[in-house]
Length: 212
Image 1: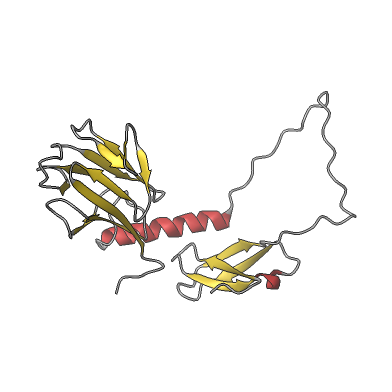
Image 2: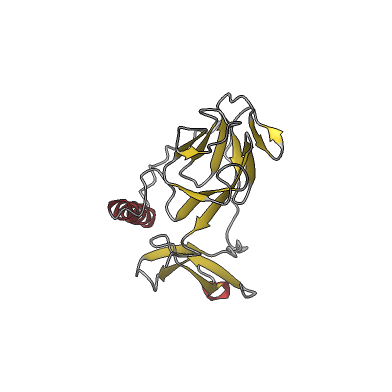
């Protein structure tokens, strides 16, 4: 349970989550943290912000007739660069260990539960970014005569969103009991129907619910 006055800090290296009393920021704009799990060092911005003191004059708008001085290029942020490198190295390690499929969002497991149809009461893990649902061919086989040979396609994006599109099937693909005509986003535990087969999308966050 999140206590009043507390915030959740997420380590960008290992995605570990822990609580922190935001009042401990004091008057500083950022605070440096060291992850107790992976020892990764990163900075967090003060969530309360800092008020502008009366001694700080507000910047005056530049006149349209006065040319603006050339802005110097912003130097690269070393913290952001280190965070990006750590994330990329972690993903590469998971891929090498066979725990992460290239192109799939890290830390998430996607599955389809068959609710009705010939394959009812079974669950299939989705192991690649693009999944073809079909009667007798594809990645998810329904064995359902009311399902077309290539009925629908599920696409899992790197941001963790899941989209489904119909492939000009005979009986259509239904989401929320309506036949779809273009890509539609699916949420976790949302149902959809292809022919006489109804599915439920299941998304598991392994950072919050790790595998044992």
